[in-house]
Structures are given as C-alpha cells and as structure tokens.
Image (cartoon, rainbow, N blue to C red):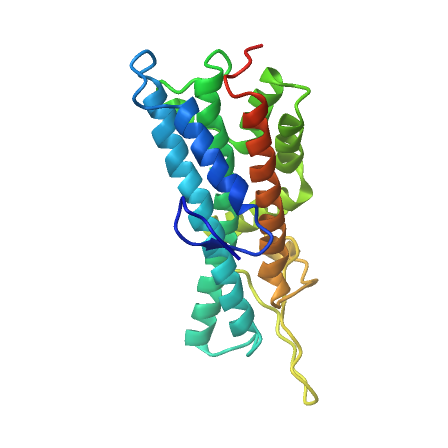
Length: 247
C-alpha cells in the first residue's frame, strides 16, 4: 500500500500511485486554469480534477465493498432478510463503483486532451462531457493512432471484462437484484447460484454462476490491475506529449 499525496489515502497494493500523482502534477501545467491566454483551460482542469478524484474514490470504494461482500457471502448465500440486504448493498456498491472508476479515468483523459489538442477534443458545452469510454478511445486513436496509450484505451474499452462489468452494473442498476437459486443439503452448505446472463429475460436465466466472493472479486481484481496499467501508460503519454503534438 502506498499513500497518494493527491487524494490523501492509500491505494491498493501494486497500484501505480506514483504515476497517479505524477499525472496530476503534469495536468496542473497542461491545463493551467490561470492561463489568461487560454481561459477555456479552466474546464479542462476542473473537470479533469473531478474525474481524477472520482477514479481514486470509486477504486477505494470498490475494494472496500468487495471485502465486505466476501465476508458476508461466506456466512451464507441464503441468509435472513437483513443480512440479504447487506449482501446486496455490498454487491451493488462494488460493481457500480468498479465501473465508475474506469469511466472516470476515461473522462479524465478526455478533459486533459481538450487542453492538448482542441482540434480533436472539445469542452465548451455541457454536451461535450457526454462521452463513453469507446468514444474517448476512438478520439485518441484519431489524434494519436500509433501511440501505445491510444491502443490501450481501445483495448480496455472493447475488452470482454469491461463488457461483463458494464452488463452486470446495468442489470443491477436498472433491473434490480439478481435472483438466487438455492440448493438444500443435509450434508453441507451448498452455495446458491445466480444467472450468468443477468440481462436476459427471466425465463431464460442460466443459473450457472456460483454466488461467492468471486462474484465481486473477479471484477475488482481486473479493475485494480487495469486501472493501474491505464494510469501508468497515461503518465508516460503525457511525458511524450507535454505540449500536445497536434496532428
């Protein structure tokens, strides 16, 4: 664990905290809100800051919710109502925070790019903030198609892991809790199952996913690794393009 001087708390083990803080330092120069010659940089700085802090807070929340869910689900996958509520709260909190962390990272990179290359990235109206990770990755690819960071943005936005995380978040956020299929045994506690296709119609649910600590940990492990990789590569990108080589 290492302490970030930018947000004031520790990131998970193996997270590139140094690069996270370094990016913030670089952006302070790139998107200087006090640049009288470019007053529009205020939008880049303040919106980047909101998203960069969002990445940190959501990442921490996801890890803490994951730990809480793992502890609760180990007690029982068929608990009484109050305990079931606590499990569902931790599950939703973990999945929603995990997806939000990735989305916040992409938004932060978009805001910085508006100061580096206004020709490719605009931030003059509220609508310009309505960008998906895929759209932001495409914009970077159009600007710097051969750069490793542009490639990484596209790979993550198109990855199966991101798609599965997004589908699960959408199902929990817009359709409700995941139904559980319980199994009764006189020998041992058999974990309940949940649909492996959470966005399907109820009659088509495929109860092949076991409800366990892996229900959340598989996503948080991917998040921590991927977020650290993205932050590291973004830091290197800003070192390579400090003034925004405009294509």
